[in-house]
Length: 313
Image (cartoon, rainbow, N blue to C red; front, top):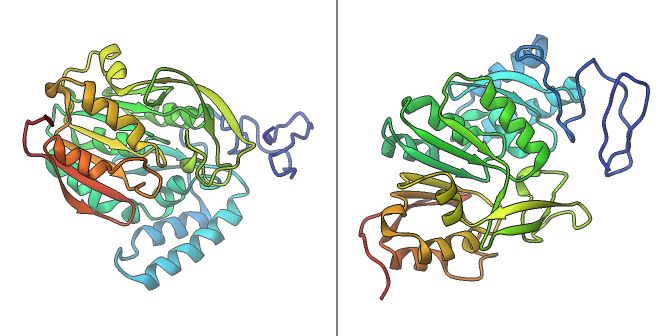
C-alpha cells in the first residue's frame, strides 16, 4: 500500500506504516504522484527558493560545497512538507518531488552535480536531428536535456516502467514545447512479455528487474519488450545515442540487442550505468567486440563510442 494525503479526511497507509496530514486540493504524496495541478502551482517561494538558488551556484568540484549542498537540501526538504516544486532545469520545465528519488533531489537542488560529464558528452556528439533513447528515463532529466539542445527533427524515446514515476515523466514532458519526446510505459529486457519490477521505496531510481538492494516486498508487474522490438514497433532505423540506467540489468538488454540488431541500428554512442558487480557477463568486453571503445568513466557511468562497424566472428 502507499500513502496518499487528500482533503476528504481519509488517512492512507504508507509502506512504512506512517501517516501524513491532509494537504492542499489536487496534491498527493510523492509516493503516488497523481498531481496534475497546473505548472507553477508549486513555484519555489521564501527560504526554499533562496536555498535552491544558492545550491545551484555551488562549485562542482569542491567537497565543502557538496557538504553544504546536502545540508541546505535537507533543510529545504524539511520545510516543503511533502510538496513538489515547479522549476526550470536544463532548459526544461519540471515538477520535482525530492523525497523518494535521488535523481529528483539532485536535479532540483544541484543540477550542476547531476552527471555533468555525461551530459557534456551527449551535447558534443548529438546533432539537431538526433535519435536518442533514454531507457530508465525516470522523470525525464536526460530526455528533456537532450530535447533542449536538439532541433525539431530530433526523435527522443523516454522509456520508464514504474507507473507512478511514469506519471511524473509524462507531466514533465507535457510542460514543454519541444514536441520531440515520446514517453513509453514499459521495461526493456532480454525477452518480451510481463515481468516483476522490484521497487525501492526509498529511491525510486534504484528499482530494478533484478533484486539488487531493493525492498523485496514492493513489486509491480510491468510489460516488457526487447530493445530490438522496441525499435521495430517505433519505426526506429538508426540510433545516435542510448542512455541506459536500469540498475544492473544493462547486460540483459544489450547482449541480445547487439546479437540481433542490424548493424545500421547499433548506436553511435552509449552512456550506461556501471553495474559491473551485478552483470553476468563482461559487458565492456562484449561492446569492444562490436566495435565500441570506452572513452570515459565517471563515478556512476561508462561512456562508449562506436569506432568500427564490425561484429564478432
